[in-house]
Image 1 (cartoon, rainbow, N blue to C red):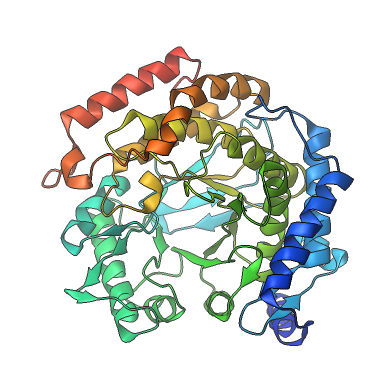
Image 2 (spheres, one colour):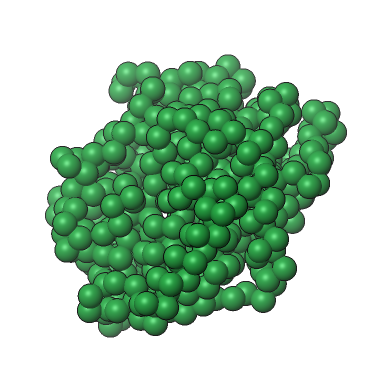
Length: 460
C-alpha cells in the first residue's frame, strides 16, 4: 500500500473510533469477548492434548486462525475514550494482511536489522531483542544495566528499562515529568549502546511513556531516532485508548519504525489456553489493522502469576502463533516473561522452554527477558537475555515434534516452583557494576543450565 493510501486508511481507523456503535465496557468484556470466544472454541473445535507443549497439527492451527479471524471481524476493538466498537470487514482485514511487506529494516548503519516472516519448523534466521522491558530501575544503574544487554553480540537490539525517578524527581504519567523522563531515557540509552560499541543499534522506546506525552516529545531530533523501535499497544481485552492511537498517528506522520503489543489474560475474560489461542490470533491481526506496527506481539499474562511461561500457556501461545505464521506474512514476536529472576536456574529453564516453543512456531522476533515478571526493582541483567537468545537460535530449523519432546523435559524443572515467586537478585548482586560483567556465581549457574539444555537435546 503506498503512503497516500495508507494515510487515508489510518484516517479511516480514527473514523471507526468516532462513529462505531456505543457499548458499555462491561458488556464488551462479557458478551463480545467471553461469550463470543466460548462460541468460537466450540464451533472450530479448538482443543489439544493436555500433555502437549508444542502442538504439531496444521489443521488445528488453521482452525485457530479461522476462529481468530471470526473474532476479529465480529468483535473488533473497543475504543476506551469514545466507548465505541471499531469494526473491520473480512475484506478490510485481508487487505491489511495482504499489504504486509516481505521484509522490514530496523536501525541504521552497522546496526541495521532485517526482519522477515517465518513459518513453523522454519530454518531461516531468527532476530533477538534483549532488555528489561519496562522494569523499574534507579537512575544510577540505568546505563550499566542497559549496557549489559547491548554488549551481548547475539542480541540485535535492546528494549529499555523504566526509571524510578528523573533527576531525582517523581515521574507522573501525563505530566511534564513524563517528557523529562523520556528524554533522560533516550540520552542514557544512547550512552549505553555507545559504551557497548554499538552506537547504531536500535532501541526499543520510550518505556517511560504511559501516556502519549513522553513518546511524542522524545521521538525527535536529539532524542529517540526514527529508526528505533517505538511502541503502541492494545489493552486487555481488545481495547485501545486514544493515547495509543495518537502514538500510531505520530509514527505514520514521522515515518518512525514501531511495534505493537497486546496483553491478553490467561484466566480472564478469554478463559483458558483454548480461548487465549483464539484471542492471540485476533489480537495480532487487529493490532496490524488498528495501529499498523511493523512487528506484533500478543504478550499474554497469567492472571495471578503475571508470567507467560506457565505450562498451560505455552501450547496456546505456540498454536496461536502457528495459526498466524501459516496463514499470513505478519512479523510476529514472542516475549519471554518468566516468574524466576536473575541468579536463579528457574529464569533460564523458563526462558529455554518458551523460546524453543515460540521459534519453531514461526515467530520472526524473539524478545526477552522481563525477569521476575518485571515487578521487582532492578531485578534484571543481560545474561538471561543472552541465554534466551541462545535458546532461540538453537531452535531454528528444529521440528515442532522435536521441540515438544525437549520442552516437555524442561517444563518440570521449573513448573512446581512458580508459585514461590523466586525473584532472584538485583542487578548489582549478579553483575559487577563497574566492569558490567556477570559475577562468577551467576555465570556458573548460566554455564550449568546451558550444559543441562545441551544434554536434553537443545544444542546451544
